[in-house]
Structure formats: structure tokens, C-alpha cells
Length: 433
RNA sequence: UCCCCGAUAGCUCAAUGGUAGAGCAUGCGGCUGUUAACCGCAGGGUUGUAGGUUCGAGCCCUACUCGGGGAGCCA
Image (cartoon, rainbow, N blue to C red; front, side, top):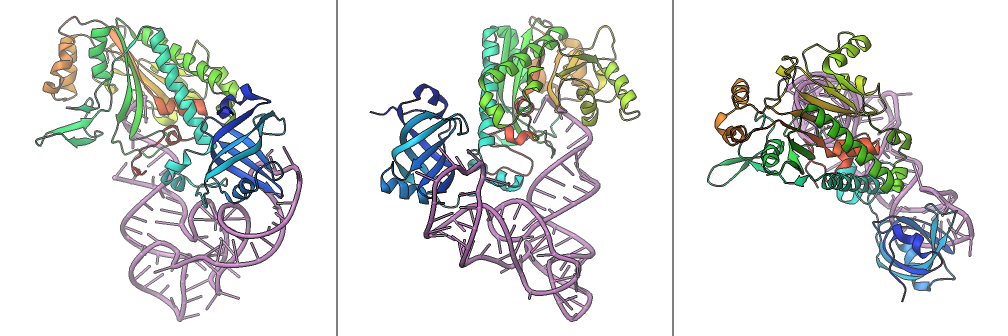
């Protein structure tokens, strides 16, 4: 009985006969032999079928089977330096389950509009396979990181009754008896509640923003990791972000070498991701911008995308910019006692011009100050009654951040657009398939 | 919401205001070491939509639709 093998484990079967079950990724025929690049989801391998070695039926069927035909092949595993991947299958038998003609995504180049409309099929291509396997490794690394550190995963709801920060970027949905609900744009406020119950927590799930943004950094639905820690100050939050990113990158380097090679990722760029990360205050960042691009950044304003690009390009690892002007930041951020014009917040800008991948802060823990901020920002006070309770019953210093998963994966993969870092990306003008 | 760019074969693109083309993909045939193979043959078009200018529009003009890149906002 031939064992059923997967392509990623072929190294365990050299010299043995195995059965592989998968699809034709690419085929090149040369008279009396077929070269079949087979994929099975775990990897890609070349299978060589000589006319003399296989049943006539199979040889004929392979000759007429196009890209993405499903098939089962049995053959001998050989170490083969001539083959990509180092292994090759000498086919002895098998069958074509379904012969396919005209798979739309050919090995030649395609445009983004076409590929996105074929996303359900595009996922089968090598590059997408590599990216989404790296996404998986990032998710696994994140969960392992938190588990090892005693954090509890306590997820925030997707349906929310009101806005966290304004309503213009919220998706509204009907919620029974003429009521309205909104898709969450951040799990943070709920994570603060669970942090007061469990100490160190994180939530990790989809978030939704109806921002009319058409850029390579934006999706309307994306996954966000949001750790929240009781008794943490801004320094703790920054240290935590640094530890997390180092851990994740290291883990991907260990577990996804094949995939990084498919993407032709420059590994030295990832190997450089080591603590300590550079840190700049907002004031220091502004001073650099004044020198590099005089007049571009107005002191007091938030940093724009071009500003972030200039700053992050100066370093070979993520850059932490902290203590932004208090007035331009969210209502829940704590004022810096050492400089009341600043907030105890931090943005982490990825290297290689990828922009913001993390935004976090120490939270305001004082009931009266927080209430004042809610009023200043003209937010509906009733909606925040439960949130204010957190400052009424055992309030403590605490903080956390949000990490954009697709932006992080995009950075690690070295890809241009976050849409490739999501299995089925949702964008302003695209919700199919 | 604003700025820039684009739309021609299934895909990626070409075509001076004058007969709509190539490569890939597809089908058939050939080839024992291909890596996006190669060679031969074949099929494949309401040039995004509507209007206008012109003897004549894929090409020029107007509007619309769809898409791409960017700004703002954000992760």
C-alpha cells in the first residue's frame, strides 16, 4: 500500500513510492514525457511522466489535462537537483479526476481588477499561496506569543451599539425592531473592560471602517490584534510592541522560508528586526521632518503618510513615534503629566516605507478627566456609561495598542498592497467574490 | 470629498483620423529534461456606455459608468 504524502513532507519519503493528491499547477509536455508541476496546497513539486513508465490511458489523459485539472499520482520520490524544490516524482500511475480547459489565471501577467474579480481562483497561484501561508504563521505566532506570556484571549463584539470615535466611518446594520447596530471599528473599549477582569488580555478579530480610502494601505474589513494590559504605562506598551514584532518576524523566518523565497523577499531586511527599535518623540520627529522636507509638516498636526515615509526610511527596523499632541489624538488617551500638550501614545511605523502598523496608548484612568474628554469630543455620553464604569470601580493605569494584521503581513512579505494579505479583501468599490 | 491615470480578443497590450493586430491562453499535430519551453495549423472582436465633430472615429470633443494610483482619515 503506497502511503499518501503531502508535498511539504516529501523529504521523508526519498527512495519510496508515494501517492499525491492535488492539482496541475503548470504543465510542459515534450513528446514522450510530461512535466507536471503539481500542487496539493502544502507545496509544489515536479512530477515527470514518461510514456514508457505509465499506463497509456494516464499518459493520454495528462496530455489533455489543462492547468488546475485535479489528479492523483503515484510515483517514486527522488532527490533531483534539476527540479525546482529539490525533489521530483517519477510517475508510475494515477488518474486525472477532472480534466480542465481554460483556467482563467494563466502564468502570464494579469491586472489587479481581473485578479481581484477572480480571487477565489487567484488563491491557487504560488504567490498568493506564499502570502497567505505567511499570514497564517503571523497569526499563529501572535497567539503563541500571548499564550506564553499569560494573556487571555477575550474577544470583543462585532456588533456594537454606538461609535467609538465618530460615526462617519461606521457601517450601519439593521438590528431588530427598527434599531441600528454598527460593525465594530475597534475592540479596544471592550478590551479595556476585559483587562480589568483578566489582567492581561487581547482580542483578535475583524474590524470594519467605512473610510473612503483607496490606497494600498486600506481595506474596509481588516483584522486587528488589540492587547490591553492592566497596570501598564506607555513604556510598557512600547516595550510590548517591540517584543511582539521581534517574536513574530523571528517565527516567520523560522517557519516560512519556502514562502519567503517564493516572494523573493530580502531576508536581511527581516533579520534586521531586532530589539531595540528606534524611538522618537513627536517633537524629535518634527525636527527631522523640518530638516528633510522643510515646511511639509505643520507642528501640532498629526503625521501624514508622506511624513511617515520619510521617517521610517531613515531606519532599518520599526520606528516608534511617541507623545503626539494631545489635541489631535483620541479622547481615551492619557495626557502626559510631564508635558500637558502631549498624549501618552505611540505609533509604530514599519520600515521600508510601509507606514503605520501599530497605534497605541496609555489610557486615561481618571473618571472626571475622561468624562470631560467625552464631552469635549461631543460624543454621546449615554453610550459610554458602561465604559465610564471601568473608571468607577477599581480604576488602574492601563494601556494597549491595535496592530493591523494585513499591514503587518504585507510588510513581512514585502508586497505593495494590503489587499494581497487578505484571503478575500473588502475594499471601497469591491465586495465580490 | 478632492487630484492624476486608464478602459481594444479570455488575459496583457499594440494600432499617424483611412482594411482591428501580436504574445499568452484555448483546440489539433510534433518533439525524452521542460522551468512563463519550443515548432506548425486553427478558432476567437458590437474597441466600456450614450451622444457629438468628420467624407471617414479604436484614435478628436462632451457626459456617464467601471477600474487603478494618491491625498485626507486611519491599522
